[in-house]
Length: 265
Length: 238
Ligand SMILES: Nc1ncnc2c1ncn2[C@@H]1O[C@H](COP(=O)(O)OP(=O)(O)O)[C@@H](O)[C@H]1O
Ligand SMILES: [Mg+2]
Image 1 (cartoon, rainbow over the protein chains, first blue to last red):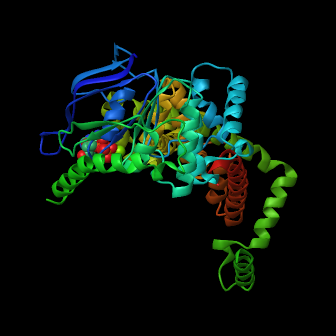
Image 2 (image 1 turned 45 degrees about the vertical axis):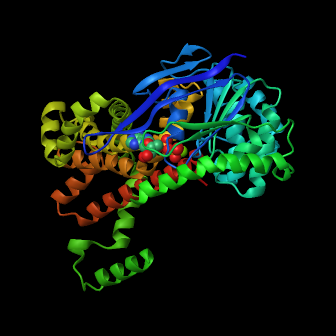
Image 3 (image 1 turned 180 degrees about the vertical axis):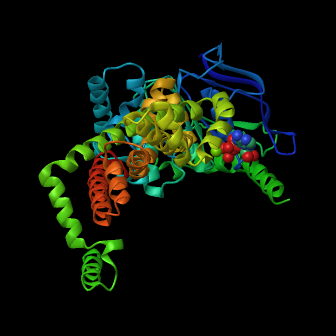
């Protein structure tokens, strides 16, 4: 199987007021096979968003290489879409125009773009809200629209940064199911950042644990052996689930504790 | 409230508790305005003032928006020009009026120039803030979706700046009219400012107040039209 994303000895530093450099990640390497669903977990502030920013081409690394489908990345990553942790819909555009935005940028005529966007709104069950503005919708609806805005682009790589962390449990589970349904059979690669280990296990093929910052690295990788398709309502009662949770949590817990000690020290 | 003030004013002036020579009387002012409208006298002057104000507004807005975008998006342009703009904006514009009279003559263009210097800075600072104010994540998201710089300006920075420009529109339109009237007041042969200054020269307080009344009504009408347009264009805010 080919490799969708490979990071080799990645380092990202930010200048800090004292004149020194804060190394958010350092000597970080991993690769993900094309078509896989990889979850990245780690304590808050360990550099998860930074890693996605680099893969999206929004942030140039201080050192190391980024290979996308084998090619070094030098500018914005045209193979990827990126669903940000924060709300990123344009408040002055209607729902349908927001979903059609990327197509419009790609030169698709407006009426075609809107037609395709409409198909996606049908798919995520929000067709009735096409002409609403984002501010008129709930947080869960806005996340679904953001998902459609990125999936409509049909790019090979999907970067998602804690997309569901602000949602209540039920909305969240519905969104997770929706995401799996969209991804299954699509052949696309997903990199999914979360701080919720249960969510990571339920969704992913493989889980990367990132160490507490500064100078974060990949601490361990865990393959999730749970069969697909998965029933997200049942999966947490699966015996394999708890065994795996316990194993990964041992690693993650250690980093969370270290992270807490550093921020309170 | 306003009616109350007018009634008290009228009563005080009629009973000569205050001297109508200095403050006139509402009934006399209304009569004068009516006279002006009937004879067509005021329309000629109002048309000149509005023409100057519209020109000042359009030119000042176009320049302000252009400069706002260039300085907000170009780091180097901002470093070079920002200090100069701040100094220029600190100048009291009224002292420029005689200079403009000298440069552009007694016709409409000296008034337009004065209005432009007032309108430009309001629009410029608001455009600049509007572009700078855009949430970083909205820009990154649009870029990931493939937006070029032109597309960013059209779909992201433009609409954001528009909300700021609109919030200052009442001010910039007011300034366009102030520029025209002050310019006329200081030297012209036509326009509402000229009418007021003529009335003043002959101690005709009724004429001064009538001129001010016409001007106020104009500003209110334009302001209402702007508020309507704003409600239409910024519908997404509600
Ligand atoms: N632009 C920046 N300037 C300075 N420090 C930054 C910047 N972006 C991120 N950092 C720092 O890098 C570390 C990792 O941040 P981030 O990637 O957002 O963490 P996470 O997403 O895992 O919570 C944090 O300590 C953060 O303060
Ligand atoms: Mg983050």
